[in-house]
Image (tube, rainbow, N blue to C red):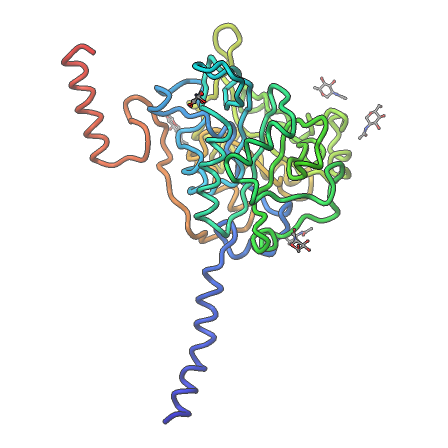
Amino acid sequence: MFLKAVLRTAALIPFLYNAASAQTACNNSPSLCNRAYNNITHLGAHDSPFLRDKSTSFSTSGNQYYDSPTQLDSGVRLLTAQVHKNGNSSTGASQWHLCHTNCGLLDMGTLSNWLGTIKTWMDNNPNDVVTILLVNSDNASPAELGSEFKTAGIDKYAYTPPSLSSVPKQWPTLQSLISNNTRLMTFVASLSTPSSDYPWLMDEFTFIFENDFNNQSPTDYQCTPARPTSLNNSTSSAASSGRMFLMNHFLYNTGLFGIQTPNSDYANITNAQTGVGSLGEQLTKCTAVYNKPPTFTIVDFTNMGPAMESVDKANGVSGATGRRTLPTVALNEKVSGGPQTRGSVLAVVVAVVVAVAFGS
Ligand SMILES: *[C@@H]1O[C@H](CO)[C@@H](O)[C@H](O)[C@H]1NC(C)=O
Ligand SMILES: *[C@@H]1O[C@H](CO)[C@@H](O)[C@H](O)[C@H]1NC(C)=O
Ligand SMILES: *[C@@H]1O[C@H](CO)[C@@H](O)[C@H](O)[C@H]1NC(C)=O
Ligand SMILES: *[C@@H]1O[C@H](CO)[C@@H](O)[C@H](O)[C@H]1NC(C)=O
Ligand SMILES: *[C@@H]1O[C@H](CO)[C@@H](O)[C@H](O)[C@H]1NC(C)=O
Ligand SMILES: *[C@@H]1O[C@H](CO)[C@@H](O)[C@H](O)[C@H]1NC(C)=O
């Protein structure tokens, strides 16, 4: 009787073990845990904090329909943002803000507030590696940027590379970043003088190269390196430099006075798996050029496509777990902002009817 119980329990062990290991996903899939950081494709939200939703009155400068934590929920693992110096309107003191091109156009608040929302997300998602790429528009020093990370408390997750001036021989696996709880990779474009006081702030172009980001037609996308310019537009120089490839894949419209705005009309094809200028086809093209998929690709309107499908394909991932599925439609005044529910659509309709009725 006793022996039977022991045998029965022992027979269960493999099942229990499988159940436990099946749950251990890294960046939404167990198949990514043992891959090196640079040997997977990370989906990035270009200009992640710049929203085109109710909060910005659907600003045409906005690049994303959902906020950064929601992007992360949906599988995005790289967030880019522009950092600008801006005076506090009441005290006049300088602060580091997230602004689109300039702070008069679209100001999404302080860098530290935004980093705080990402820190909270990382607290709640301990098996995920997140990358932040900051465009250093007003040449903030490592100390100025670093103190924003400290204020947000997110520096505790920051990964420090072996050297700030050269590409490591090997990047760690996602699992080792997760085990060490150094799950935040931070790149800055650019840091002219990286600092050993903030050894986790990495100069982007020391470690990464990019294709041209300024594309206005779906046939414009290139795989050749545009930055750093020292690579002389040469794919072989880029590959032999050991830098990781960040593939820009978003379209601009050029309007009056040459002002560029993210192209939302074509986003359902830009972010799709197939079609002229689609993410899926461009990933295939650049994968052939470099003999491996890009390490990062950044897109506008990440929910469209959805872009995640092409990235899963590049990673050989199927059946990803723990993701939130977002609607693959554009948000505008008519559709309202935020995830749709009958209640919120009704509320908007009522609000619009009331506003029209009262002429406000
Ligand atoms: C990258 O990952 C793929 C898929 O698991 C694997 O086949 C390949 O050997 C890896 N390459 C390197 C250099 O780690
Ligand atoms: C401006 O500074 C005041 C005082 O420090 C602070 O309470 C306020 O939040 C700041 N405004 C912004 C937009 O950061
Ligand atoms: C993890 O931490 C250990 C001990 O500090 C260190 O030897 C190892 O290099 C770290 N791994 C990574 C990927 O940083
Ligand atoms: C780029 O071209 C310059 C001038 O011809 C040369 O000195 C340099 O080595 C080249 N860089 C690479 C990475 O090929
Ligand atoms: C790279 O290509 C661009 C666009 O074709 C060109 O303007 C630039 O001069 C080229 N740079 C080098 C170093 O060859
Ligand atoms: C993309 O959206 C446009 C409307 O904005 C629609 O006409 C078109 O059919 C859509 N294409 C695909 C492939 O979903």
